[in-house]
Length: 174
Image (cartoon, rainbow, N blue to C red; front, side, top):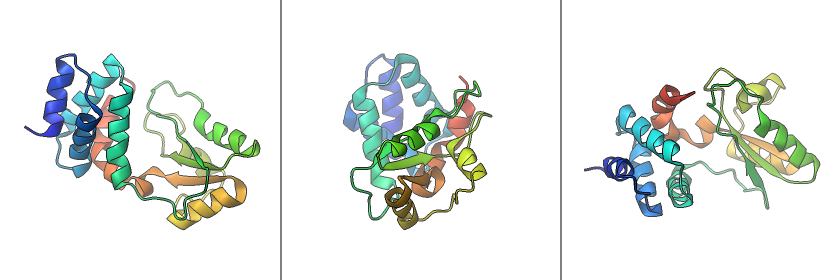
């Protein structure tokens, strides 16, 4: 049984996943070998119950192992990222928050993607403002250091998440 299948069984039984179990399940997802239906099932189970801190931390651990990092990492930077996919066509608050935080003196590493639910994703908004979505690791870090906001386009900085894209689209608005 894969770690993803074990996590689904545990969540179906009403139990929370440990940080290690969540990390192992996410590693399965990021490997690209997990069925979309299984990925969607785990995400739905966790969302219905409410994710625990340990589950989120474990999934973050696995994602950080596979991400492309901005180099050099802007010192003291904060990451502002919305979850998107609410299906309600809401205003893109996280991108506006990035500019507000930068105006207040923060260095922001803004992470985002195109809309997945018909609204406006961070990438859509920033592209309309003329921001180059193809910024490299160094370009994102340089922008953050220079103007206070560096944008990290999710497909470029988290390419392994492509393995979960179909499952996430299927769940959009649920």
